Length: 397
Ligand SMILES: Cc1cc2nc3c(=O)[nH]c(=O)nc-3n(C[C@H](O)[C@H](O)[C@H](O)COP(=O)(O)OP(=O)(O)OC[C@H]3O[C@@H](n4cnc5c(N)ncnc54)[C@H](O)[C@@H]3O)c2cc1C
Image 1 (tube, rainbow, N blue to C red):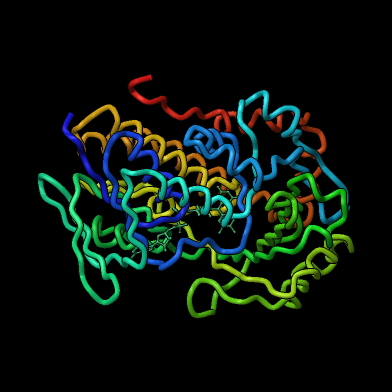
Image 2 (cartoon, rainbow, N blue to C red):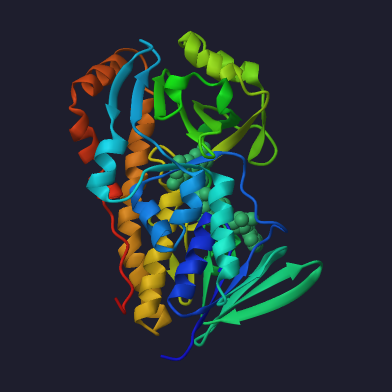
């Protein structure tokens, strides 16, 4: 096979993972990123075993081992009673079952580890401060034109991967597809020092259900920091898609919640709130030699904590297919065939969770009772189809 090349637009978690997997497949990669430094928002991320095993395969086990926290359990709690409804023992059950850890990480730690791995990879050429302005393709290749420091530059390769997130330009310029839509939910995120947090919250990932709102929290950054994400049914009247959130407004949405939870919500000085958006499902993920990956293909509600995990899986599958075939258009067709159904099942499950998490009144009480009765083992086995996913092994193996 002759040496092939790829352009990846976007150096988020999806783009960096894809660049590493494609380089592993033997292609040279041009990675184009709009930001002048690679940096993630200050927030946490849950990385389930289906994604952590891809990262470990890429050699990131060691750097992430010191920053990520392998949570011991997921605790499901009720704001109505203040008590725990059920728990999944990730430490003792998930690791032996799936063979890979359930991590919670600071996004910046994961992004740094991926970026450093990409910088070490001789086949990857990274251009920062490069904003995509045009996409083109013909029978032999694809091209990306970017604005770098006021000058236009065009890069050519055998294929182009748009990993440029929920407001993807590749989606618009390369595939002429409609973009993301607001879902009527906002996510409020904050990080506080772990020293301010009660000890019984420091080893676990915890989700609290309440009326029209829910809260997720977990430790990050080697356990030194604590991540809070509150999701509320909301309007969006701000300019842009994130804005500083008023703590008093957030607390008013959690009125009547147990004091120990309201105390947590009172800790952060500042909250950042985000409009949650979803991509329409059913649309193509590629056209000719241009493909979408990660949020640009399938931005979803975060109620399965799988958006980044699916982006990471996308990269592993695309890299594997490219390692096996020179026929780019056929590879992209197979990539869509292997990925879209699974991802759309995850999206549908996240939408179902949206309804379940935010129930009110009697249906909420019925949900809580049902959750108390389900054996914890069965709760975990419901996730087997997601967490038990295995990355394809390289052709030569
Ligand atoms: C509140 C919340 C909680 C979440 N929790 C989880 C979780 O626990 N687990 C999980 O797996 N997922 C979670 N997700 C989802 C996850 O954050 C996303 O799915 C993931 O970050 C998407 O990565 P990406 O690389 O596709 O896109 P992005 O991270 O958005 O990266 C896109 C990159 O493209 C660049 N770019 C954009 N436009 C251009 C352009 N024109 N030219 C050049 N570069 C460009 C951007 O600068 C950026 O670096 C959560 C999401 C939210 C909102």
